[in-house]
Length: 83
Image 1 (cartoon, helix red, strand yellow):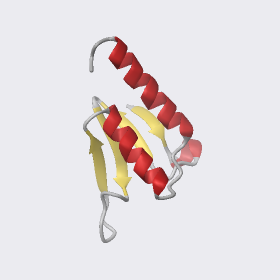
Image 2 (cartoon, rainbow, N blue to C red):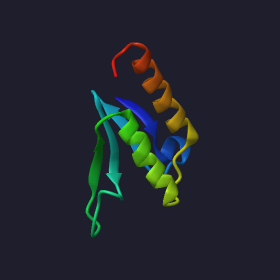
Image 3 (cartoon, one colour):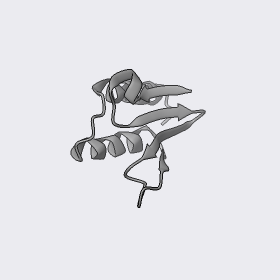
C-alpha cells in the first residue's frame, strides 16, 4: 500500500492511498451523506488529482506533496506508454 496523504503524517484533511492498483480517498466527506462514510475510488491518477482539487476548493487541506507524488507517477506512466 502506498500512502499519499494522512492526518497523522502531514496534517491532511483527507487520507489518500493506493491499494494494489486502486487509488482511494478513504472515508471521503464528498462521497458521504448524512454522517455515513464512503470511499472515493478514482479511475486513474488524473481522476484523483481532479478529486483532490475539489477538496482544496472546499477548503480541505491536501498537502502539496500528495499532488507532486501523483503527478510524478503520472509522468512516469506516460513515459513508459502505460497511459
